[in-house]
Amino acid sequence: MQLQPSPAAAPHAAHLFDMPSRHSATNPPLAVVTGGAGFIGSHLCERLIESGWHVTVLDDLSTGHTANLQRLLGHPRFVFLHGDVTQRLPLALATAHRFYNLACPASPAQYQQRPVQTTLTSLVGTWQLLALAQASGARVLQASTSEVYGDPREHPQRENYRGHVNPIGPRACYDEGKRCAETLCFAFHRQHAVPIRIARVFNTYGPRLRPGDGRVVSNFIAQALRGEPLTVYGNGQQTRSFCYVDDTLEALTRLMESDVEGPLNIGNPEEHSVLDLAERVLRLTGSRSRLEHRPLPADDPHRRCPDIGRTSRHLHWRPRVALDDGLRETIRFIRHELAH
Ligand code: UDP
Image 1: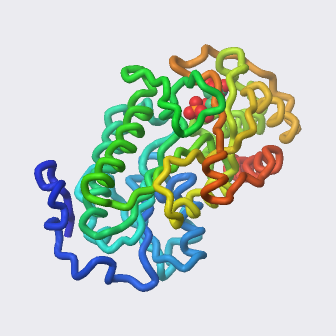
Image 2 (image 1 turned 30 degrees about the vertical axis):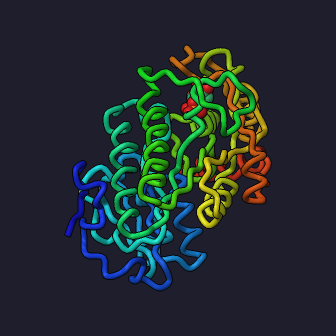
């Protein structure tokens, strides 16, 4: 059986299905991870299973891979559902205690290929989960993004910075979709007391980044290992701060179980230029690839670095994994992927 709130029904989402009682169903409780077959999502599922949760994944596999869930498929507390958060939601989601909403392509190359779906995934998908949560009492963690700050004019970015986003540019499908998803979360929270948590996730890297996904870390490593030129967009002086996936997960799960709604920045406050990253990748892979400059994509943010003061205070968290160590793990994974 399938569920789908209609726009008219959203304020009365409790009528969408028969709830036996709020949170009565599974013991241990159920966490739903949308986008759970993706890079961060699949690591999150493993962590939740290790912590004793039942875990159900909803993923349309548009950018995720069931290979990421290899360790979990067949586990008695794990269920994979192939489906799209913008379509009718499976009834199984109605008993969830926690929704981790990670559904959305995150690589600029991928989300710009299907801008309509990208926008709707954040809007309709988040709306549907919030409507379910309104009915069930579940808590919703929205995986938001540093992209809500756009091409920022303040450094480092604090959560109270309102951003500098082009609403009609090529990145808008992602940026504005995620901004509006935050708006929806707070709207449901204010109007219907839905428990929400907002995580603004900055660039994250680690094993399960796919060689062909277009992001800078996976591109550079795959290019270096293949002996191809590393494609540096623009002059390479633009910066990012790269957080290892284990550190990101620790913050996400702490935020979910905290009493802070957020938004909280989740990222590594160490800022690196793209050129610096290229040099590290060459050094760590031992590659003799050269650098090849390509045009800077439109609206590419010039600087990005999180202020994590608020996150550290609330979650007692700081990233632990040094960039070279995390890159070594990522290189190991991508080397293996390329060999098979
Ligand atoms: N970038 C690059 N070469 C690549 C891929 C990306 O120089 O092959 C740059 C890109 O222009 C951006 C940064 O690396 O400035 C990070 O890009 P990514 O696509 O990983 O994510 P973003 O942070 O832009 O969402």
